[in-house]
Length: 117
Image 1 (cartoon, rainbow, N blue to C red):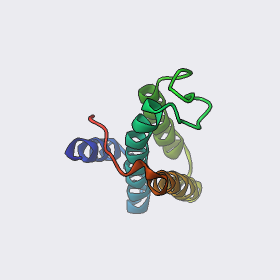
Image 2 (tube, rainbow, N blue to C red):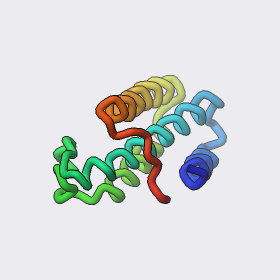
Image 3 (spheres, one colour):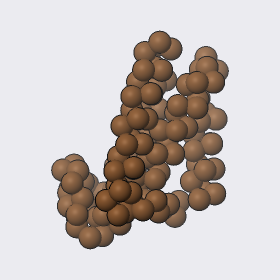
Image 4 (cartoon, helix red, strand yellow):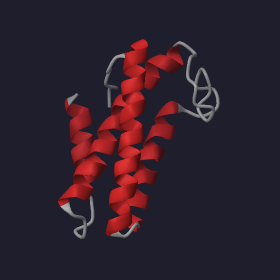
């Protein structure tokens, strides 16, 4: 858990100086929810029950780790490219979607496991 927290803090620390506190908090929230989703997805893929067609049921289409890293890096790049008024909307909506997915996974019995980073 400490490694995941440290990784999130490090990524958000790289946020541009033009970001407002809200931008940084929303980006950190998105990263934290993605790390939780990643931990859940590791268990899901091990049981060949993944519903994401990009990854595949057993992780056969795309590696889960590169997919999640690309998700975080792409999200950060888009967040950085957007003007503030659009950035807040983007980050808020995507954080909500990712947090909802982690919650849905938990309700479906996958818990909140954190990956070894």
